[in-house]
Length: 254
Image 1 (tube, rainbow, N blue to C red):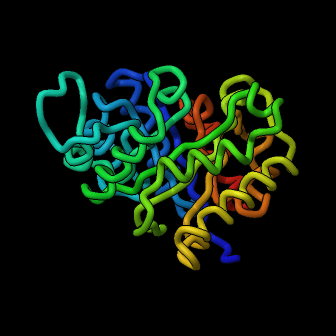
Image 2: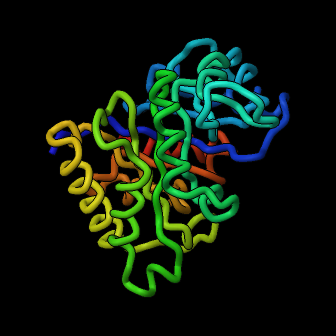
C-alpha cells in the first residue's frame, strides 16, 4: 500500500462571520506557509457565505478551500441552493458530500449523494464522500454492511481516482460526542473501505485517500493518523480553533 500524503480537512459547519472566518483562515494560512510547516495537505471548508472571503485571505497559498455541500443540478430554480460550479467559481477545489448531518438530519439518501458527486466531478471538484453507521447499526453488528451499501449507492460505478474522490469514514455516534471507536475498529473499517474501492477502481483505489472523522483532536490525532489506511482527518469542532487544527496537522507529519 502506498504511503499517501495526509489530508487534514476542516469542516467549519455553520459557524463564523466574516471577521472570524478571515482571522481563522489567516492564522491557518500563515502556519501552512511557514518554513517548518508539516508535510501534509490542508483544507478548510467554510460556509458558502465565506468562500470568497476565505479565498481572498488565503490568497492562493498552500491551504485548499472546499464547500460543505452542493446541488446536483448545474443551475435552475432551486432557491437557497448552491451548485458545484458556483463553489468552484468562489475558489473551492473540494466539496463535502453526504455528511451525516445531511444524511440523518436532512434526509439525504445515497441516490441524492450520488447525483451530487457526479455534479462535483463535472465541475472539477474533488468530492469528499462521507459514510458512516449509527449507534444502533453498530450495536447490531451492521457496520461493514452499512458502509458497503453507502459506498455502492453514493459513488459512481467508474471513473474514481484520487484526482476526484476522497472517502471520509465518520461513525455517526462519535461525531461531536467525544466517544471513539477503538484503533482496531478504525483499522478494520478503513481496510474494508479500501477493499470495496479496489473492487470498483482496481489499483487506482490505492491512491484514494481515506479520512477518519469523528472527535479527532490534538490529543488523539497522532495515534489515529498512524493507523493503516487512515490518510487524514475530517475535522469538525477542532477546526474552529487554529491552534487545535494546526496541532492535528503537525500530528499528521509526526
